[in-house]
Image (cartoon, rainbow, N blue to C red):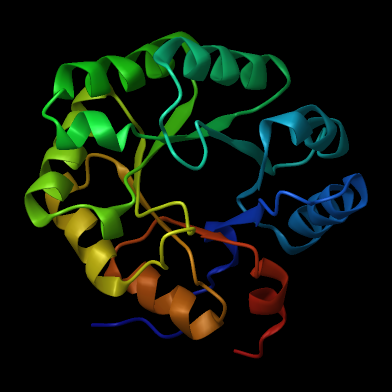
Length: 218
């Protein structure tokens, strides 16, 4: 039975991923995340330290993106980016997988790419799958490789190649068998959308519209 009275606010990773975002916008997002009770703020690596300082002594997690948005940087660069972000205070890492490796069958490289970040960072890693760019077989393979590498979440996409759908979330929930969380990201603008995705199995929601959702009447 669908739950229509869910509160989506604790599920929200409040995204500040406009490349032109200013320090003032990051500061405001941090204040809003704390005030409304979002799960995290998700900022670019260059803003992690700033967000960490502003959310000190709050319950808001500091999320950042690694290899964003293409996933095509080298494994060493991704690892360095991840570890520097952790050093600056990041507690969650949304890592874009290397789609070229997936599509050419180099799943061993894809696995290593993620596993080293999971192991060395010690933080929750959310693997960004960009499901809209993958075939059904590739989606399944990507999910399995990412889970085997030790990720904590499977994420529908960056939000730059289309929005999250209920069907995407259903797929990730089914293939993960509850072993990892499911993050829906992209195009989430209303409370109704958020609740539908949670009912489908999402345990996190990536959106830049968190405040608008929070202010909607139930």
